[in-house]
Length: 168
Image (cartoon, rainbow, N blue to C red; front, side, top):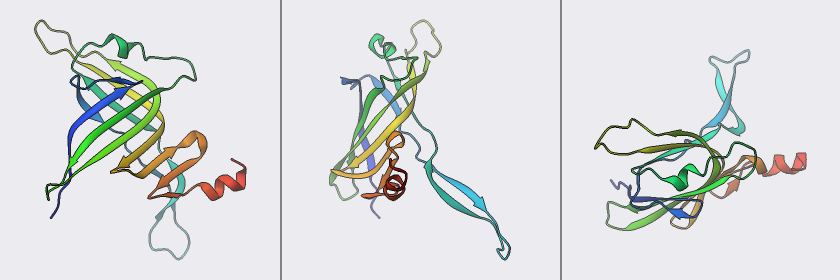
């Protein structure tokens, strides 16, 4: 059985590399929205996909008190922050690959942790996202662009037809 695993993840925020500074990254959960449906003659309810996903959020932790990261906080609309998570993929057969996750969003929370003498410094950043694209070994496998009414998976834009119907 082959098992692929992430190795050497790195982070870029607004074009700045945090290689050697980022200690943890949590990519967003991509969760399709469903509506429960039950009608006469059915033995149980089923979930019907709504063509939407839940709000996307990600977070990462830096092992340094980073002034430039603090400058990324924006409290008015517009001016989203671009960020990229990159990692190698090691496969059980010894081959290697790459994952690149490109996102845009706003800083939602800055958690400076607890300050203690001679203790590790951490800066945990939570972001709310308006764009997500995941590329594995050069192939776009998932893209979510809520502002442009687009959700692609495996090369199929599942909202394209509806977008055309509504003039989006």
